[in-house]
Length: 629
Image (cartoon, one colour):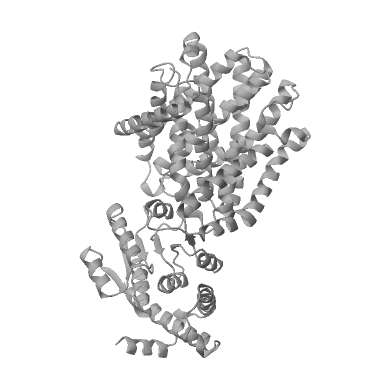
């Protein structure tokens, strides 16, 4: 059945909507639902797809690119640098061992040397899309296996570059200008310089991230139009991917590095909220297209060869990955998950196998067979992970105490409650400053890009974002949050967010700023007990109660609050003397307010860093006790 690209896309989305809930109902991975749906509508079952299936797959590969961009946003440059040993150790070891063993298997099977090396390099890669989707669904990113998987995948994405450079050397083939467009610049360099394009690409992205991306997003955010931020997000991801492809780098790797460059920016959560829906949609189409492109005619012609190759690849990769996990002192349950998760062949193999065919390393028939092997391993992996989760891992977990279980989250400070503050004006900043002064971190969302930039310069964890949108709240971590502090100037927005969170995340404890008594009545009637009518005193009261909620003794929190008020009043008096008297009766512009706020923040930092509050004199304590009385 011939159909247009739009009709194929409609079919892919439709089958995803039907099959994924069905797969989840039976406790299966969403990836299985997508791939099964693709097989059903593909040219070998219902034959509903037309000749544009490959076009859809190429377009949907942007889902993989966006997934890596979002992963990069979650990984700060400092942590990325700290992971360099893991990336090189795990990734390089896995690639070298897998290529060597697969090469020996293929040579033993009677393949030519050049063909065996080419296929071994292609099959050494794993599926970034499947593994990261699985880690996301199982919330395993911060486990030992999750970090090992991510490090290995990242190295594999880097390894695509030298593989692209090595394949023409193996084939003894001189590329012409008509060849693969992915190597536009790489082919013009000497062979010994081609690997250096990775350094070039990273350098370009660092410069772009610092001097172009963030200023560009600040400029767009000032328009106040959400749709422009959406367009800007897509523009950045697609633009970086195309730029990396032009200089010979993996587009997915480029997108990941761009995400890392923006991980410390104030737009991190807003970018995540804007791109996440597109990522999920395109990944769904990608997985469906994988299922629809499995060539069952090729499998029928020689099923023994196809499935023996599949079996050999899965066994070799599993053994290598499990051995590496044990060598790097990852416990057995985690090593098993790591080995099962990365045992398949990755989506980049589709590109590399076609490229090897263009170089006449593979015949058209072998090309189709290797494509089928790649797709089958991708289909089998989710099933292997289910077997591991349900039958293998539970046996090991029962043998060790929970406190030693490696599937626990790796965060060192897991006792601190996750706090989100929405709005950081004069009210919200009082709460945030007192929390920061006591070394309690909170994620802050604000819609004033100038204020966000200022606060970040003083070490606050502040992000630009519209908290009235569920995707933004989710990106800020509302699913794991225990405390939400609402301090927006707009009472309607505070009310809307409070209702939204109570509906979707009822376990989150809400602290809300009220403009007046009427606001307080409304919040009380909706079941919100922690209400603070706006004055300096009530803002500090809110902060004191938040400190108490995090585990601090009530008396200690109250003392800190009183001292904070004393500092705040003193700082206002000191700073007011430096201004003309008329300043107090003038309406501040936004710039003047930010300047005054900067002075207050600088004063806070100086006083809280240099004064030992716990070592106060007994006279001070007696005075405080009297004032409390």
